[in-house]
Length: 299
Image 1 (tube, helix red, strand yellow):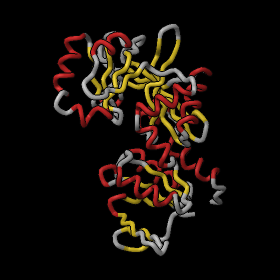
Image 2 (cartoon, rainbow, N blue to C red; image 1 turned 180 degrees about the horizontal axis):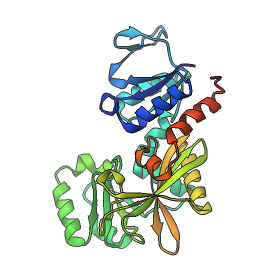
Image 3 (cartoon, rainbow, N blue to C red; image 1 turned 30 degrees about the vertical axis):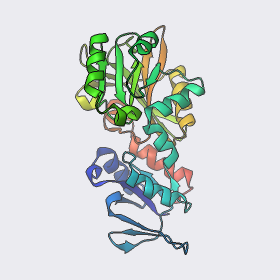
Image 4 (cartoon, helix red, strand yellow; image 1 turned 90 degrees about the vertical axis):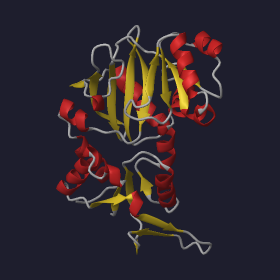
């Protein structure tokens, strides 16, 4: 069994990548890290499509674990491999769907899962429509942003007008990447990260931001705590991963009023450094064990 962990040079030493390779080695599972920048694809009309790494022709792997944000370069490689029956964890279509916050939330809503009210900006925004559908404060974000980057809280019409003015010249190119959402502020600066592997909740953590900060992402220096998921939280997270089509997923859940929940986003290449620390669960081992069990690999 030939297994690649597919990443890029910027993420070569990322915690999750290093830990997965460590646990694969500990289990005697042969796994190789491959950089997408080192790959060259050759296609022709003789159906002799080939893949090269560092200019050397290589045999196709059996399984690939993409551990990097979706890009055109990454998609070209994973698409190439999938069409040659290489199993992808997670597959390209699901990864692209998860990356797009608007389409992924739309998919969840169509399946009756709870999400924040969301508006996709198209051209010059209609302030009257926005104010009719959403109450202040309003959250503005890029549909493909990560780790709470490019997220703003708009507190009133003046703030909204300022943002629109700032985006006015570039909105025609950005409008496909910007959404507005209702602010879920029942527990300000808190959310849940639920980690799923092969339709099982492996671990979860509660993330808490600084006082008054609505962003709870641990990459910004906030605190994380072990969290034992309730049956409702487990069902929501598992259904979200299933609907998006992910074998491995990180589901971010916001606390709504009346003990309710709203799914913030679904992650196809979730980090797990702080989750391992908060939960004392060996997430990397769970991922490696899933591969062993899924493909009936003898070690």
